[in-house]
Length: 266
Length: 316
Image (cartoon, rainbow over the protein chains, first blue to last red):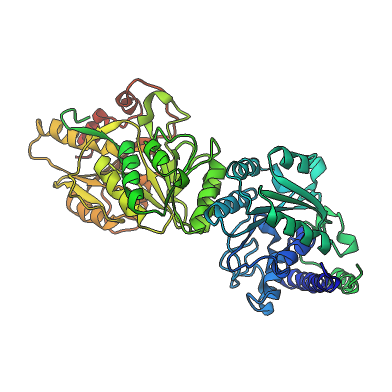
């Protein structure tokens, strides 16, 4: 990928992280940790030009990452950025968990483990287009995920890409402590999928993996190693930031300063 | 149960109707969970292999796969036993099908005590309660093979999520072939003056039997029998009109009392000006059990013909 493109995506991601922080601060709360970890992956899906999202599909299985998707959709002009501050309030279309009433959203989710099955059905019904699903690592504790992994293999859904946001944390602690997944990549390989493991904050690696996945003749899994709370030092790997309510102003300003600084380093 | 009437299989009628519909409607898909022979879908699978999606014994995945297929524009029939779908995969139906408001018909066969020898795990008595409580979901429970055919045909043309409750054994034929089913309409199967009997599914046949047995003793008493196969949306107007006339209502169903048709109707009645005497004959907070005939079970759980006659005597 040309350097210019990579810089463009990083800059978009920086702006979206700031939007996301503002949104969660102004609206009184939201799932910030995983939204910050998965944001670069969504930016790549929406802004890399690899997909035509009028025909291709993006299914967010981990519906609590709604803040990330909403900021990306606003950035992609599906709706006005002003709407973001209404997040999760009574008269807003931006529900706490992702909802298809929002322009650009194709699937309402929130209960984990269902989206990969849904994406598989959609990929089967739309064989000429790509269906990209985003799941979380903790979500792989749901049994249904493994049902869908078998299903996608049986129907050889080569037009299906599952990006797993592996930030190693879930609501009550680390995935390793709560229910370890051990070697997730090896499990996908055993189930007959094509698997790539990448740094989920490195746009060169994300784009390369997505390009390869588009060419594959098997269902595709991209294991994206990410950082919970990416971009804010005190949120990093701190599961207390899985979901936050009423961020105090000083914390907000501190986080904002870091995200502003977090400029185009790479 | 109406031994002199010809019988036919409701689930066979469903499988064969869907096969016929799929010949002309290329949009019809079946999502199966290893129960194609039980739902008479073997012919469908053989003739339309690309539209027959076999998920194996994995009902949760199957429900969301069905939703995804519906999202791509297909009309999807998710076919299983009621004890697995909607029972085991209810949360997936709730989110992926209902909340997303997609064109999936959940077909739950072997519902109620009519699955006889299979025992408690398979005798699904809570499905109507589960499905009627879901926003966007419509609920249908046909009384015979002909009504099953009509409902299946109507559902294949509707874009909404729906639940179709089927039973296992062959049951008496009530309707003739010219019968036309409309969503949200119930049918008065027999006009009468003194007691309104409502219900859904083949158990309602017992009302005819009660009428003929009871008439021997009291020829001046007549029952009005209403088939509420469209449980949601419910045709409450027809019920209300009838109870205004009779002042007495018995609801008979092969389902739990809690969340069944009887409770749905009772709630509407209490909100109206008309308060008839009311008896709800349904399974009361118990699991089922195996038996050689479902009539043994109907007697044991208090929903058999004797119980109905007792209720009629009590309410008069």
